[in-house]
Amino acid sequence: MTDSAMDVRDLFVGNGDLQAVRGVSFSIPVGGRMGLVGESGSGKTLTALAMMGLLPVGWSTEGRILHDGVDLSCQSDSQLSRRRGRTISMVFQDPLTALDPVRRVGHQIISLIRRHSDAGKAEATEQAKALFRQMNLPRPAQMLRAYPHQLSGGQRQRIMIAIALACYPQLIIADEPTTALDTTVQKQVLRTLDVAVRERGTALLMITHNLPIIAAICDTVAVMYAGRIVEAGPVAEVFSKPRHPYTMGLLRSQPTMDNIALDGSSRLPSIRGTVPPLQDLAIGCAFQPRCEFATDKCRLETPKVIEGLSCWHPIVLDAEE
Amino acid sequence: MVTYLIRRLVFFFGALFAASVLIFILIRAAGGNVAAIVLGRHASANAIDALAAEYGLDRPLPVQYIDWIKGMLHGDLGRSFRTGESVADLVVSRLSISIPLALSGLILGLIIAIPAGVFAARNAGRPVGAFVGLLSQIGIAVPVFWAGILLSLLFGVYLGLLPTGGWVPWSVDPIQSIRSLVLPVISLGLILGAVMTRYVRSAILDVMNQDYVRTARACGMTESQALVQVGLRNASLPIVTVIGLQMAELIGGTVIIETVFSIPGLSRMILANVAAREVIVVQSTVMLIIVFVIFVNLMVDLLYSVLDPRTRLGQ
Image (cartoon, rainbow over all chains, first blue to last red; front, top):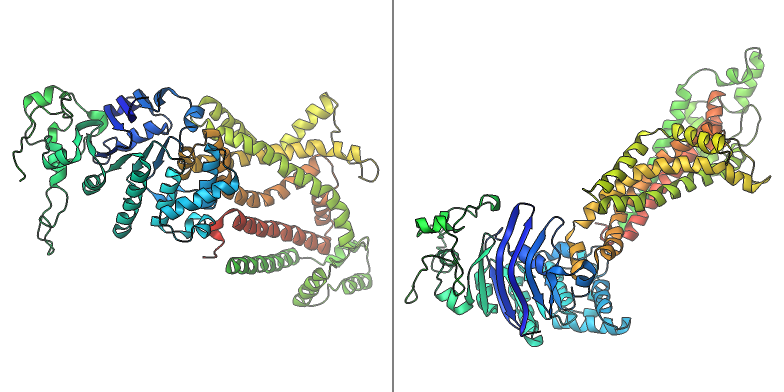
């Protein structure tokens, strides 16, 4: 259709009375790279699963999920299954549990390629090998015959990425793809993902609570809090001049060489309080109980989204602090 | 893999040894002068001693045990006191009834349990799923002999479709033999199926919540494809284990069912020989059954290593 790989409009995700995602809208242009940040429980993963049509039993969506000319929110499981892995694919958080333990990894990627194309077995095997090579996996031919338990976490995540890339999708959703990996491996895996996505012009939705990853990889960022996007915009702008107190808090609580003393004497700034339970969200701004600038208006009226910001009293930063 | 095999084999032979000692001791512990009981009240002391000597009952127990094991290893299971028939011959003729009965019961149980368990798992939390769960619960609660009697009443007495019991040997009329086995097999299969349904249901429920099922769907499988290609394949691991454990239940079930339907199978033979104090027949046949059960469990362990690549590395 138009020039966006994914266009989400007023998405609500709920389970009975519980609304975990409450009116989320964003758009990822073709080949664009968007970061979605927020604390655990802010609704990031449910948003992603809703886009894939893979919500757990009991959860339902409202709103529109426009992708490749159709609204995914009103497609059947079999219609969606023809898209998953082909036009839209996903890399999950934990590579240790995401692959079928009783099948060779080669079988898993080759069957995906054959399911979505008319490639024969030999051709699909060649494609899989090429993908593994691109993922910097050593000895692709042998690797195809390996079972997941024989591989390291980093290797498994590279394989997951290869699987996600296999059919040249328009969009890849990566849900905390490196959180479960060792720090040294994280960088390499992210680099491989970044390079592959750029080469192919695939759009990327990177879900993480690691802000440096967003800064390094994404063009735009959306900050989620309690099921809503509170601030969104180009990465450079949002990170250098955060306008929402929550974004500011997130940026401040990232460990840097300045706020960490190696003798353990330092205190990392944190946002006071915790994410409120979704079932007792009152009217008004959800962040208001934790916000140092909160006023009566914040307690009574939910802030509207204006220019990608949902706050009654944006912070104005003139220069870098 | 090799260490895994060796450990399984050591366990297999260890279990066989322990079982054989236990059976031997338990049967001797029943006490009494076996030869005297076999020959009856009016037998002379000389005749009793002669019988005891003929069957080696007068020798020390360890010698008897070793002779018994030696004989078993050579295929000599001993002879009956009363008829002098070889136990091996007796067993073989009975097995031609009991093996088809037990195997068909097991297969029928699986044919019931796998679809019913999958259905119950897919409909977990809905009334239909709960209904299957209820049926399975009833099946577990119903004793196998009562199921046999009810089926025999319905199909044998009221509908007159199948024999209510009895047995026509295979060599006489194979069709009649099969007809005699239908109701016993259904009784066994229903009860076994009810138990297995629960295991299949929980195995599937457990597997379908795993991340790799979600990955399979993210790779373009529909829910049903993921269930069959990934779910069942992974759920087969716990299910196979349970099948091994159910073998003992199955043999217990055939003892009862053979009695209910008056089928002269192996189990009925054992019961009759227990009553007649045929020490050697009983100990050899029970040992055979134990060999069978332990062997099936060894096979299950080996099958497990085929099904689950994670166990193949040994550690």
